[in-house]
Amino acid sequence: MDIKDLMPHVEALIFASDRPLTQIELTELLTQGLEVPVMTERVAGCLDAIHEKYAADYYPFSLRQSGGGYQFLTKPAFHQTVLQLNGDKYIRKLSMAALETLAIIAYRQPVTKAEIEYIRGVSVDYSIQKLLEKELIIITGRKEDAIGKPLLYATSRHFMDYLGINSPDELPRLKDITNVEVVLPTDANEAQPEAPIAMHVGPDGALEEQ
Image (cartoon, rainbow, N blue to C red):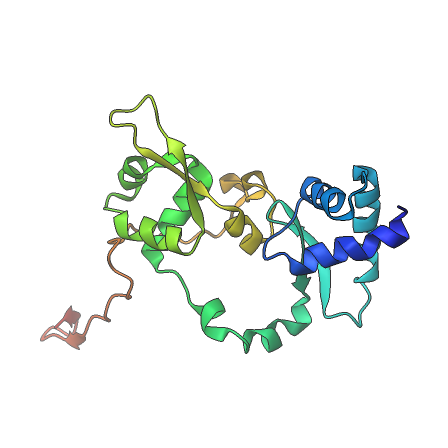
């Protein structure tokens, strides 16, 4: 089967999938579905042709490689329009505690809960629970050489897909990040910002907390 005939089948698989598909997965699915041997090189040629096809301005989406595989993603010009469809789903933000925990896992993975708590200085049970519910992290196994063999946590394919990267190695190096805001550890059970401190002018004219 040549690329021209194979290409629609590759497009159909990517459209129908709810997650990025790797080139190997596409090859296996095509071989099973078409009941004929499909060469990986043919699939690669199809992916290149599809990428070129949807790069045209009149398509609202394009083929992107992210999360370890290929998927169709809406182009930036249409993000605000699509946001109206499931606004609550996409604009719901993580708490600062969850973000801090996620950052530690991303850069130290695989990592145990105790190791995260040592870095943050507080319990991370609630944050880890929320990150697991949102499928941003996964359990990869246990640390066999540690007492109690604690669970190990790492970022998920969904996390990489959300950031548009293919592996944790593509995360920016800490030494390359500039203008980083230093954030003190927060209580893992707190998701609301601190209330503003009320101030008044004291007898000597200096500002004092009420």
